[in-house]
Image (cartoon, rainbow, N blue to C red; front, side, top):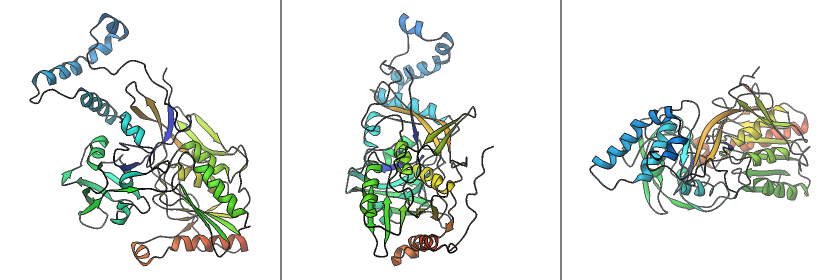
Length: 434
């Protein structure tokens, strides 16, 4: 049975560069509770020999048998002639899968072995992991930084959204497969990696990064002295909604003036958590996001109801590191006029992957649809335009300033007082789908 798990890929898509994690994606599931098993595509073991038995021949269409003759010929030639024997059959098999997926032109399509898939949820669910801590986009010619994780070695090393990794430890990464790039980045706490960065407007330069153990809470919150409730959601992990709801309820007990939801540098997470988070601020049965398939079909994902913060005035902070599930939540709140968006244009990751489990415990993700906001705005490659555009520069970072947060407070006060917003931009520049 070929069931699938639909996901948003952050980074989609995004990759978190951890020790032993993510070859290609930050999974955003919505058909499986976290901790469950993905449905298997087949109960057969992975092929390590051509289908030569009568039973195998009978189950394999003749045209497919003929088509794959060169593959098995190559397989045998490698085992017969390659200078270093024995050959690792698992690596050959995984390389063949990756090779097939790389021929697909649309979206991100990738393979993860069982270990990588199991470990790729560590950051997503607030567990410790070792690595450099950065979301990256691997759909282009080079890995591109979406955002460094707060407090991570990548952030401390000065990596920024838009930085392209063109070499690792002196080795050119042009055209290198996502899995190979992942292998180059893996490493335990205390080890060092040198990445060569291509940044717009400057010559390529090297950055030395020491991997570390990183623990990032899903939710951080405070009731500010000015009476504004502030909550930062770092990722849409499997307990994101429960933790967010608890934090908001605690602050609502103090009757705050308004709420700021900070989704900056949040690269995504589970789709069901994105729907649940949006549902905290929207009435029941509102479209949170559409899935648009190649045949034009639209599938609705609706708010669940019982939200804890349906009426409080609110602002959502976004930036170039807000991707995937963050864009779904922010886009829905913007479309319904439930919140104003403050910051800069989001990353623009809105492709849907069907993640299929394989018999060896690995998974294959295949692009199957795109996400649209409730007003049917495209997210992919476009992102969301904030209502109030405010940049956060390197100089601001070094000086300890946060002009985006300041603008969010100012925007919230304007909403409360009925006064004009501090800076106005045309809301959403993406094109509605007919």
